[in-house]
Amino acid sequence: QVQLAESGGGLVQAGGSLRLSCAASGLTFSEYVMGWFRQVPGKERERVATKGWRGRYTYYADSVKGRFTIYRDDAKNTIYLQMNSLKLEDTAVYYCAAAPFRTTVYEYWGQGTQVTVSS
Image (cartoon, rainbow, N blue to C red; front, side, top):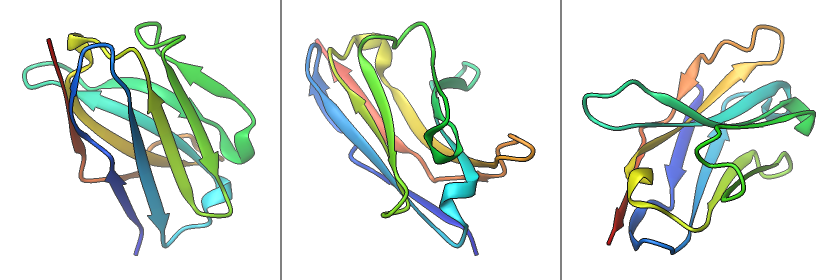
């Protein structure tokens, strides 16, 4: 049974930092593309950042480039999202997801962790 467990969300002031973690189990972690997504009520889910299998590529949404960093530790089956210079518009529920490298279709999702940025 595949499980993705996010942690690290919370309340932070604008300009602050948070680091999200997502621990995966039940899959061969190194063979999966891992991504971070976020969603605000009433809006579509947005892909924030992606790290390819075995770290082969990285994607960032334009809205987070230069502020967020995604990295993975295959030895720990964990993906991280370091978020710096947080803005009010970064407030959302953040989800991690896993996609087999052969399909790049996200099949597994975590339960989400709330990030709230205050002024």
